Image (cartoon, rainbow, N blue to C red; front, side, top):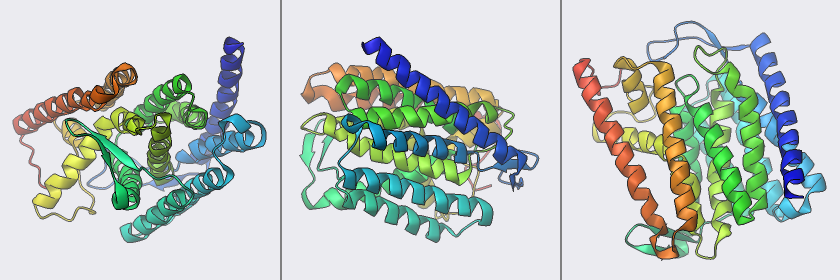
Length: 352
């Protein structure tokens, strides 16, 4: 019985992947061109907007879920609020891919979408921290949930600058989250993660180096938003909401790079919203590491974090937050390696 259900779900996911691939091919045939500049990692005009395929696959999956799978649905206000906000993020981001909107406009759209999700009832009420344990958030619950959703949306967006890096990383993270949610009986998170993974499976073959198309903001912002929302939804796996940590743990490599770069640039007095080439993954590639190798390193991070998620799910409640420690240690090692390679290559951290 269980095997039959899994096979049906995989068959449906395959259909969604084919829908995504068809949409991506159309975006290649009628492209929104991304012209290279001094801060680009590509050398020739390349189509962008391939994330349209991921969005269409996800929305199609959610429509079927809403129509015929009550057990995997959130309450209607939450379900419709989350999906509506995600679609709105995708539409504004597609507009940005076409017209290059100001960062302030994008940030406002992200905040509005996050507030819709929060208003529908998805709020993180407590946080689990290493050493401190479970911390009730009280009046901080709303602003911290807003900060998390907007921050994760932008982090994934900022990290989408190298062929296959974000697409492959989020594909693996969504697949692992799908399995973890199924084990915990979180069926909405299970289905949503499955649909995201299916959409990325259709897109990723076109995005591997040398990429035939980029996902664009329509893909990266949508993925960041949905993974952030699924983290809050996953908090419901347990009464203490410790399971919120599953998604940040899976995305830890992307989040660490984005956070480190943001803090470093702010400390250096740089305009943090300005384009640059000083993310750790960019410095690694500029120092001579191949594009495929840098992407593979980040895929390896997600796989390692997947092992940590398995440990997390089986550890006693009081020790669960400690799984963040080995993830942080690996990222500090990556930072040290990239710093050494950059120094040997004569690179500086100044925006370039």
